[in-house]
Image 1: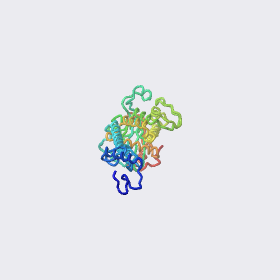
Image 2 (image 1 turned 180 degrees about the vertical axis):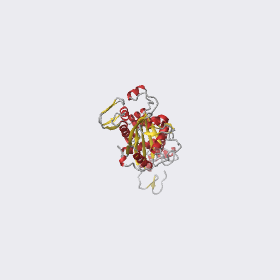
Image 3 (image 1 turned 60 degrees about the horizontal axis):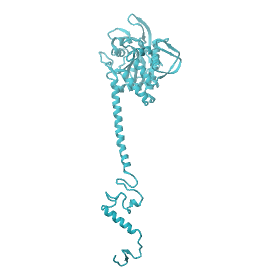
Image 4 (image 1 turned 90 degrees about the vertical axis):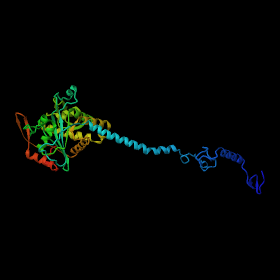
Length: 392
């Protein structure tokens, strides 16, 4: 090699050559010859091990095509997918909820009940439900009818009737005794439950509206099988029985005290007339039990437990008969209003004025016209029921 002033063999005078410098330069030249586009990390292509003199390699990190030193790009891609995955899950959840709602709504049995007629009571403040418990054996085979002591009568008759009101004046649940003697369109005067026998729920609703002066907005009816299924779906209802109650006709033998009543005992409890005041005391038990049932059905322990909420939804929607203008959300609102009955709401029975009998109706009871007018007048005007008319 030619000698240049101040340099020996290409190096400045006084500088020392490292022993491996030639080898390093030869390797560098070899890599550059093999990869003319440059070391990996600097250009789009090249040796994955990179230039031995690159900053990333000197820092001790590994270089990846799409990310900084030390971190694989796959992890970043997975993070970017999470919003998309959550979005898909949200859409699926919405579809399940919406689809489930319409499926359950379609299971409701509907009938044209609340129809207009000449002289119908005009709309009144608040929301009013006519809630009917019938003795329908639909869905019960012979063995189930025997077990529940329901008898084998065909068709259906009203076993209980209640008027649920909620609005600015609060929440009230008023029992309408089935032996109440009232005028029935086209049939003179008879027991209230006879209206159901004469013309089904349509004539019953019309009779209640005319007798009370309260406009009925919604109708719900449930039979024996539906009642038992709903009670069992929520795991039974805790009821405090005031005194020992044994009624072979209703199939119950209950001891006094608070206890959890399952389907068959619950049905016997609300059906039994084995009391000193017969039907009047029975309607008190019906209000008590129905309020406790709705409170438990709408509790978080039931709604957020799929082993209870799903059977409850299936039993309720397949066993409730409603007006053809009612939907599932109406039933949910009714259940929620019933919580108000159990949490300080008003429960009472139409004030009774006396008793009587007739060849067509047999024994019946009459309403105290003054007090009944005061009670229903409060509902019609959206006012709270006077305290002297309240019963527990």
